[in-house]
Image 1: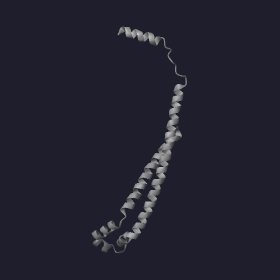
Image 2 (image 1 turned 135 degrees about the vertical axis):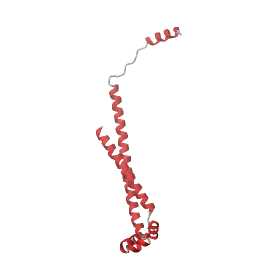
Image 3 (image 1 turned 135 degrees about the horizontal axis):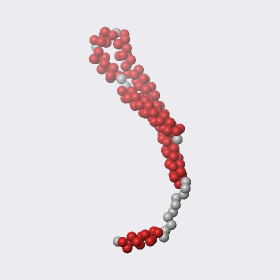
Image 4 (image 1 turned 45 degrees about the vertical axis):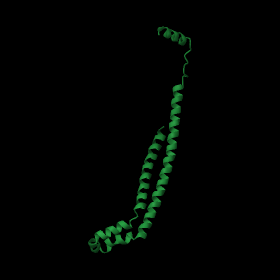
Length: 135
């Protein structure tokens, strides 16, 4: 074992140890910064596209929900509370069931989901834009 260690020491003592270039650390850090900026820019583009798409979906579904509310008779049932309040109050369970049946839940849910995704993507968009402007 001792003989092997001397052999390795003699072998490696004859080798020249390479020295790294003086600006290697600076070049490495600059490459990392450029890579991070490219990733942030790509993320910014993706979040912008997601914001635009989700906002378009939310607006279209909100419009569809409004049209479906008008076609389903929801407003006629709801107007009973303003025209004949006491009659509507006496028949409250039936009117509430009619309101629930005529409410376009799917369109309203998709509109709400679109607005939530738009809000979250806009938040990420602002945060990444702030980070990109700092670097």
